[in-house]
Length: 199
Length: 199
Image (cartoon, rainbow over all chains, first blue to last red; front, top):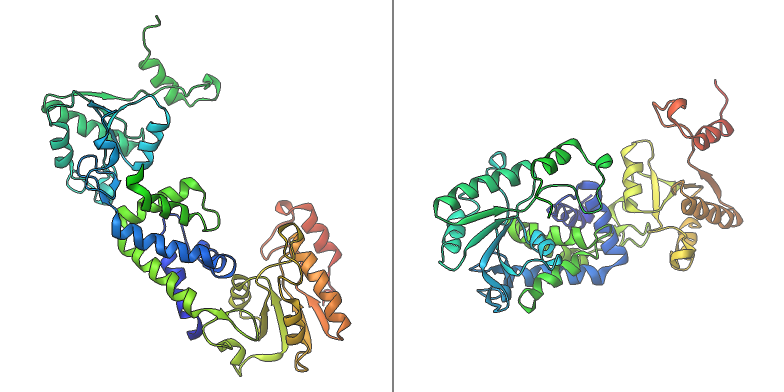
């Protein structure tokens, strides 16, 4: 149907969004065109503006409009702690705890050899330079407890140790409010292995 | 964080997509900025182009770049049959059957009083004018078998009947390859009610 080519193009373009297949893309396009043209306009503008203005913070690698982001420039954060997370969304999770006041480094991914993502693609050298600034005393690895996140943590710990840095890993165990009965065996086993003195 | 405002705006803008909540919007924004900037650019352009070029076909109400779409202009379609569907995606489903060669009318929605969508919002008058062109002999109601789709079909059938048109409804029943054992009782009951002579 030659008459709907810009519709087809929009549907195809929507598929660049993660988790959006042909059917969802179609539904999204119809929704935008039929029910939310202002939203579509806003989205187009938002994409343009973000592409133009957002870069990576030179220190923490998170998205930032400035060369160094506000968080890295903040004097209220403890510069001796550096927490390494995979993605900005993980940084948000950490911040929501209000339990951490150090600085961050965002990997923007995880080691994933099958997807061709290795130490080079994640620019680990930049991270090592950042961690070896002489101020950082402890690097806290907060990558996910997936296979890839674990491999990334393991790899980083070796190389950070080699640079004489103290490296720690966030704990595994039962979730707060968790019950043994409803936890998987691996989690319970890990919670047992990583048990701490009860004082 | 003042430094990431265009990121926040993009995340907020992505939420206009149906089924996209705050977490998905965040994931999408990060994905686009980190892994698919070309896709983001293409999406922004696709939105702009679609908003600019796409309107509704004056005859079938489907999206079209021309005033009347190719399908409505086609001489290979049977103009005596008019199939009414809720959305363009339903039209596609009908077309994929290769079992229908008549024309369509796309409601671009369904009656949904709770959402404030009534006969006026769906421009039923336009549909009635279209159906009463003197050429259409049968109107086939192919709205979904949801409560709202059924209500829409019922409402339309009364008003189309009143205009002296022959109105039919696509059949309910077990799906092709369907087994009684795995079908819900309502579907089986309907399949029984709507049984046809076996010849």
